[in-house]
Each structure stands twice: as C-alpha cells, then as structure tokens.
Image 1: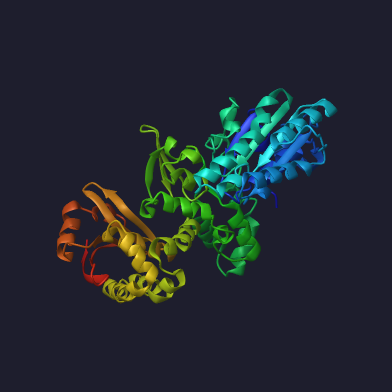
Image 2: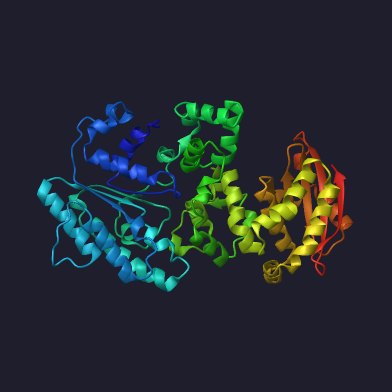
Length: 506
C-alpha cells in the first residue's frame, strides 16, 4: 500500500528555496526527505502512476546532499559533535578530502561548491533531524550553548552558498531560532503551521477510509469486531492531530501502521521511546499537567524558539504531546489539547512516577481498576471506599511522601495524582474546567454518567457541595443525556487519605 502525497511533495519543492518544517518524531519526516531526495535526483521511474506525474514535466537531475543528523545524537561535548558531523559528510559518495577544510562547516561549504562546479547544476540540500544533536542537552544551558556554536558554524554555508543551491529543506522536531539557518537565512519559509502542508505527514480520515481500509477490515477480523467499530477505536486512539488552524485531522502514522502490522491496539508511539528531554523540561518548568487538556493560547506561545522557552508549552506542542484542537479568529487564539488516547496514556506512564512517586503497575492493580469498575457500576460510595483505603496505605511509599512534601498545595497534589490515575485507565478526565461561576476541579466522563468532582483539604464536604450548587458547576452537563452526579471529596492532611465525601444527583 502507498498513500500518495506526491502532489504535496511537488508543491513543497516549488514553494520556496529554503524551507523549514517541524513535526513530531515518527511522523514520517525521514520518508518525506527520502522522497524529496529521489525527486531532485530525477528518479522518474519511482513516481510512475503517482499524482506528481501530472505536475512535473522536466525531471531535471540535480546533485543532492541528504544529511541525517540523527547519528549525531547523544554526543556529550562539542568535540564529539564536530567529529560526528565530519563523519556524516565523509560518508557522502561525492565527498573529497581537502586539507584546507577542517571544521564541519568548511567541509560542507567545500562539498556544495565542488558539486556545483562538477555538475554545472545547483545543489539540493536536505537535512533530516537537524535538531537531534541538541535535544538531549536542553537541560544544561552551558553544554547547549557550546553545542549550538558547533551547529551554527555547520549551517553557515547554507546562506553563504545560496547562489549554488536549488533547494534546501530542513526538518526536525523543535525550532532552534539561534542557529544560523534561522538567524542568517532571511527567506527561510517555516511551513510548520501552513494549512497547505498540514497533511503531508500522517494519514487523514479520507486516506484511512480509502487506501488503508483493507487493513482496517483485516484488523477488525483479527480482533472479532466490525470494520466500523474498529475504525472508531482507531480514531479514538491514534487520530486527533492538527498542524494548522482549520486543517484536517491526521492519524499518527507510526502507531497506525504498527497496529496494522501486529494486529493489536497498543500504544506504539510511546513504546518506541518517551523522550527524556521532555520529562526533564516539564520538571524544570514545573508544568501543571492538569492544565494540558485545554489551553487557550496565542500562536506565539507554542511556536516560539526552543531555547527561549519560558515554559514547556512550545516543546510539548512541537513534540506532538499537545496539538491544535480549535482556533478563534477573533481573539487569534488556539485551543491546544492532548491529541488522543494513546498520548494520554503515555503521559501517565511517563509522569505518574515523576510527579507522584507512585509506580504505575502498583497503582493500577492496587486501586485504579477497582475504582474504575465501581464507577462503571455507578457505585460512587464503593469507589470512594477504594480510594480511602488505597490512600491510607501509600504514604509509606517513600517517593509519594517526598512528592507530597514538595507539593505547593496538598489539594493540588491530590488533584494531579488522581488526574493521572484516571487518565491511565482511559477514563476521560478534565481538570480545572471553566464554567460561568468559576472552575470545577475535575470532571470524569463515563459511558453512562458524568461525575463533577470537587477536591477539598480544608472545608467540610457539605460546604464544598454547597459551592458546586451555588456556582452551577454541574449545569453545563445536564443536557448531555447522561446521569450527572456531583461528588465532593475531603482529604485529611494528617492521615493522608479521604476523610469524608458527599454525593448528589444533579
């Protein structure tokens, strides 16, 4: 099967001489760079029968420098990085040793000029994973600055040799503006948020329901369900990414194809490696994880340079852990949210130990499944008893005690602890939900019931229930059709567990 996006590849190749595009890992950036490589080399036979054939008539062969900088990842010093970059260039078929070229930038400069002189044609430069050497050192400003200087020197020839370049495409996960590619190339077009190219990486709903539909049918047969039901499950788990305002949704291509291959619904994107740099940055900026379900922000808040971040939001968006869900043209603000079920569960697996000191497996077996089953049975009292007995035991877990002691407020600590636990079980949870009268601590969406929950440390449960009623926290859900239950949970800070709860149907 081949999902044909070659019309977009052709448009990209003719959009601008210098192009930058960021996309999350495993979204097909490398396949895109390989396709551009073949196009500029004039490999017409590879494109027979595809959309690009009606657009391209000349198929001119250009020399191509296709550099994959992922092999330079993980270097711990500027010297190691320089050696790695030089090795990448030496592996080029067109490489020639020149004694006067010592640094990576000098060798790249020489390569471009010699290729132009030898062929008489401009050179296409394609750089994949341009930011890979820097991502692992984001947490160390001194190391980052030293490594960035190496990368700056490496990219200088792209501007200096503009006359010798036919096309230059640079892709990666994040946006480092203080590299020479951004600071010196005045006409660099950043198409990361352009609607025209929003579906060039990832599968659209239309592509799933046409080209990929036979795979959906095979998967449905393997899991003994209907294709329509399987489609809904795939959509919930892997769809939901938007890379521009009003752009079509796209599925995570790595997870979708892995699911088809293994005939099993799983969290493949996270299983392939949750970036440690992301967790470190979230800790560094004290990210409020309960706010990630709904963030109204201007474009400048999440499309800003990685090295100028004042919080983890740009990294979360650029890495694919948040995505665009809506756009308000009047206020020029974007609604960002967690893309889908796979990302939500992956967050929890990475963040539960980090933020609460609790072990995922212990939480799931010891409490979460019991709590979830009780909620499914609409037995809120049983659910709260499970919560009470579990919390009474975990203060003896050293990690939990330490995180609790470090928490700004006890109420906030319990709030994000339970946010993570519920999310782990694929229960849809929203926190700090805005309503006309204020903010609801937590709303839990079950198949038959919506629970509007308020968590309290000081006030009595009755007082908190009066607050829910006075401020109309449950009103927005009364027209939903599901049963709406108001729940107040009061924590005892001395005993570290639930001291009382009150419930009331709306």
